[in-house]
Image (cartoon, rainbow, N blue to C red; front, side, top):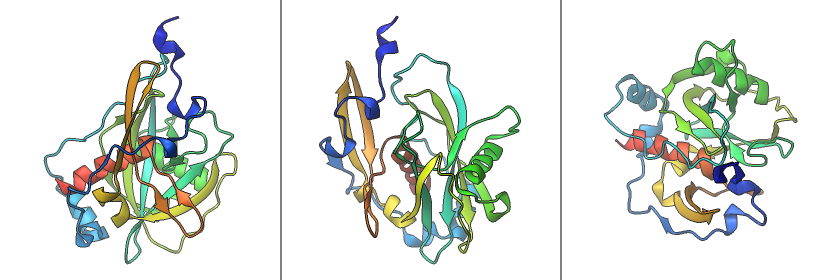
Length: 233
């Protein structure tokens, strides 16, 4: 057995709590995305005529030797006057990334003809939103997690007024975060930790909701960081 086969995800290390890992820096020196560029019409224009850009994050250090698995997530942008992003807290019953803040999504199936189909199917299964509610804008580059998921993030608009039917086996809660908050780099905090000889670095974007703080970190924060880079290019 190689040393890398003993690696564990940070979230499963004894006594690991990402909230307690020191903040190394905050990217308040970078410009936030203007509110006008976060409106649905502007987002549509950006995806129709994308700029030349490079994602900041592509591949996390691996902690498993299993083959990579194709997956898709949906970045659902709710078209309020001030747009929001719909996020979920994963059930603690799940074996991968349990309890973490995530986009709706999951593994591709053989019957899925594209990453877009995977993202919409998984969203329907997890939170009960039907495909016809979405206006798909496009996709961001693949983000590969340390747990060997090759994730295609699909961006879509949703009109307000929908009803959710969360799958309790997969989702503990569903909530919305202002897109402007997520696209403001002064809310992007950097962390690092050495785990079993491997230095792992990640972003966090804690958001204080009406009742609780939603601690957005890891792959979800990394994908949002790439979305920021796409919109700011």
